[in-house]
Image (cartoon, rainbow, N blue to C red; front, side):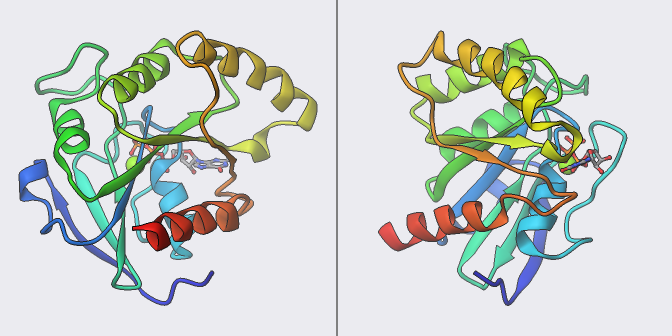
Length: 198
Ligand code: GTP
Ligand code: MG
């Protein structure tokens, strides 16, 4: 699937200031530096659309990107990075929690997990919280270009096991590399399926 137009529509400090909730949207969320903004650029096919940085905490507000004038990709600030402002129990901001709980057009949260590092407790706390709040989500493993197939398998096991402590089955999983453009078709196909089912 080709994306013909990709437009940055704005950056919003609160969910109730976001664009009118009229079109389906898909939010990218995960620990700081996991690769959310890079993935938005890879999926949209526009290199400089979202701001990428080696310094964690680059994305600070809720950023909207309009695709083909019909659906949004939403880039959220990362969690697990000390910032000012009110925090919920595991360190993601009130802004993120409010957005996820109150946005009627949110179809699915893409929870990004870096497969190069061992499972982190805040990822588990965050996905548990999504479950408690009935927010649909899928898992997106990032930066798979940095790891061998064998190591990937080894690293996935504890990540999946941690997850299965809370859930009976794994949600849908995507394997991605923004660097090597891996996983784009699968994610776009998924988005297309969801959009077609609305
Ligand atoms: P915050 O906005 O700070 O929460 O970070 P983010 O999750 O948006 O991460 P961002 O896309 O800014 O990327 C963080 C760093 O990881 C940058 O140095 C990227 O170049 C690097 N990175 C992102 N995706 C990949 C990938 O697929 N492969 C590799 N090797 N590096 C990546
Ligand atoms: Mg970012």
